[in-house]
Amino acid sequence: MNTNIDRVWARLQCSPFRMKFHLNAKDRAYFDNKGTDVILSHARDFIEARLAPPVPANDGKQTPMRGHPVFVAQHATATCCRGCLAKWHGIAQGKALNEEEKRYIISVIARWLQAETQP
Image 1: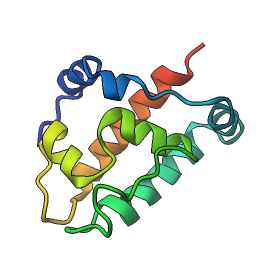
Image 2: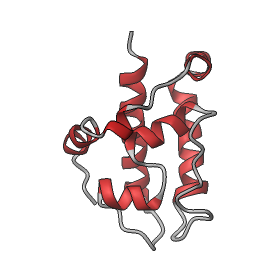
Image 3: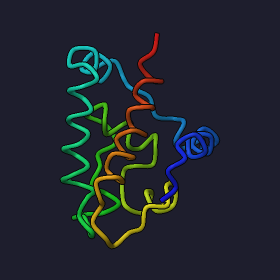
Image 4: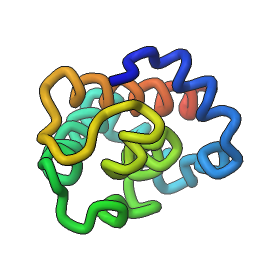
C-alpha cells in the first residue's frame, strides 16, 4: 500500500479526469449542514459496505458519480473502486481491506473534502 498521501495527491492533481470533480451546490449545502464528522462517518459506512469486501458487488460501478459528497470525493481521489485503489494507491485487489487501509482511504477522502470546502 502506498500510504504517502502527498505523493498520491500530487499525482491526482495531474489527472484531468480526477480534477473535474467538485461538489455541486446541493452536496456543498449537505456537507455544511451535516459537518465533517457526520460526512466522514458516512464515508466509513460506504467504504465498509462498498469497498472492504475482497470482491465487492459491481466493482468498478459501485460508487455513484453524484448524490453525496463522499461519492464525489471518492471519484476525485480514486477511492471509488478496487481497481482505482490498486492503480492509484497500491491497495491490492482480491482481499478484504484491513483497518489501516480503511483509515487511509478515509484520510484521503477527508483531505479532498477539506480542500474542496475551504472558503
